[in-house]
Length: 128
Image 1 (cartoon, rainbow, N blue to C red):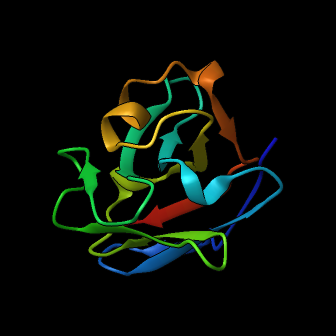
Image 2: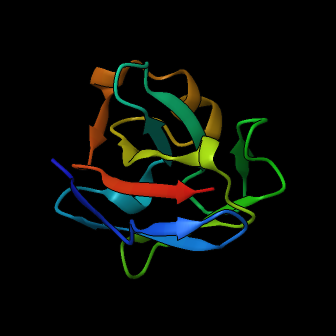
């Protein structure tokens, strides 16, 4: 089973940029789609971005499209989420997730949570 560890969360100001990283170990991370989700305490976890197995296809939630960029390095078993023009609505715990069987961005977006491997999360706080 793939283990995922996120890093890079921080307290930033509105308009700042921040890059989150996800390091994978074990399993076949590089062969499957992965994505980023976020959750505000008391609210449901929401999809943020997905990238397919090869890294050549991406998909974003409307709320982050044009501001966030997801990428991956299959040789290093890592993934990143670069976030620009951050605003207080982006404040959340960000989770890296990897599909256990799917290879496409659609697979990542539609997968039930139990079909994904999850990291422990990293906190992002955007002050106004």
